[in-house]
Length: 431
Image (cartoon, rainbow, N blue to C red):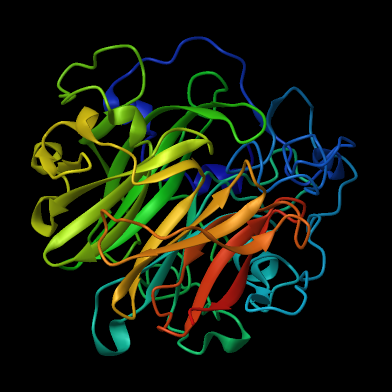
């Protein structure tokens, strides 16, 4: 891959952190910028299958991978992003693009980002001027005319913007400054660098993607999933989920192999797997409450139910300290005891405590909707789903993540649209 991609390499991949040997497999090529990724199918928003008129989301958290093409000859460097879509009358509206060359943040010029997705947000836990919202993104691409399209598996941005009515403003990146807009290297000051690396081998580890983030006592935590390969229609297969930590406000990250929840039929030396049931915690959503971090989990892909566990804030890295909700109470140390708190189909999700209640957002791949539920307690019971956006209004939309500085009346959240492969900010009311 190109020199910038090499310079941007972050920590080792999740599989390397576990000490697993990769089997021989063809190297993957990324083609996120090619208009052909939208395909000519009936429109599920899936890689190679249309622009998203049939359901929400993609077959992956990122673009189509694993093709054998030789490059991106003739493609526009800035990618396929279009104008911000509009919603009709109702409580939910689009606010602004967060990423992409058309966004107010001009991420192509300032961060070498033509396309990315997710935008998982959390408060960094600091006070005063040091307080920020950190945003973690998935597979990220830059110059679409280059053979490697400047592929990074994950990147981070920071913001202090508290007025969300006109979007999320991200400051300029500054090499070595952990409060600046994004981690960059002195050799590439306008190139957001990768946080955690991947083997980038289809069928082994195609990418490593963030699914949740939280801050506790000055430490930032991101839960990543190691993706083995992509399928279609909201399906993918994971190797494991694992937590990485940062003590410098997201500037550098270290994976902790002891937090791995393996989703493979094998034993890994030195990694203790507590029980079956870890397959239900491959993707995560974090929320702090009453001295605990509540950890919501879903299986690989977008068609499973949601489960919940909790752990004392000071023990987030200790899998033995987790308790799992079985419908009647909290069961210590047994992930297999967890029973669903929200029925399928739950895609990427986020949870926040707003206005005295818990608010959950997720994409329902089966119905083609972005949905919201509320509850007085993390374990539920959760309300019936309220539909915020349908595929008829905005096709190809997926991965809603709540902005932690939302209020009890104005709920702001990010979501990604597959056809543009970029992240937008939306607003809805909680009345």
